[in-house]
Image 1: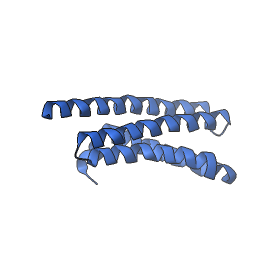
Image 2: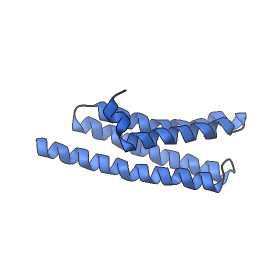
Image 3: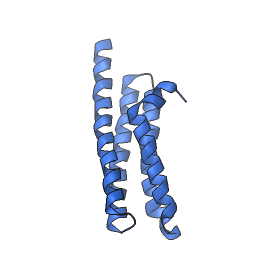
Image 4: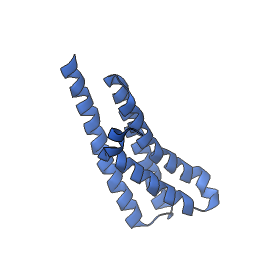
Length: 124
C-alpha cells in the first residue's frame, strides 16, 4: 500500500465506512445478505476503491473520473443505508452515525475533485 494514500483522512474514513458496512452485512438475516446487504457493502467498498484508484492515476482527468465514481457510490450507499433503516435492519443511532460519515466523505470527495482540477490548471 502506498503510504501517502494510507495517511489520507478521506481514505481512512472510507476504510472505516467499509468496516461498518461489513459489520451490518454480517448481522443481516441470510436471505437479506445477498440483496440489500451486498448492495450496501459493495457501494461502501466502492467509495474507497475509487478514491484509491483515482489517487494512483497520473493524469488529473483520470483522477477526477474516479473521484466522481466514488461520489456516485457514496450516493448509492446513502440509498441502501436509508432502506436498511426503514426496513428496521439497523437502529437510528447506527443510521445517523453512518450518514454523518457519508456526508463528511461527500464534502471531502468534492474538495478532492475541486483541488485536483485546480492543480491541473496551474500545470497547464
